Image (cartoon, rainbow, N blue to C red):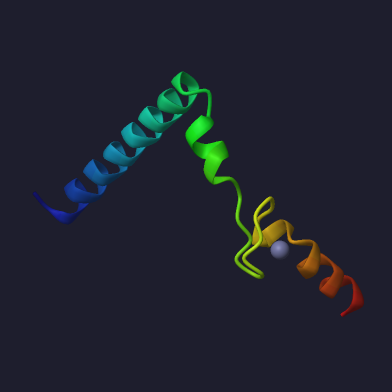
Length: 63
Ligand SMILES: [Zn+2]
C-alpha cells in the first residue's frame, strides 16, 4: 500500500470512528462524555475549557 493509500485508509477509519463515537454517545445519552466534562488546562479546573477560561479572558481584557 502506498502513502496516499494509507492516508486515505486512515481518513476512512477516523470517519468511521467518529461515526461510532457519535452513535455510542447517543445510545449512552452522552453520559460518558458528561462525567468527564470539560477540563481547563490552565488551572486544572473542571467545568470549562482552557479556551473558555475566565482567568484567560480576564487576563486578555487587562492585557
Ligand atoms: Zn480555567
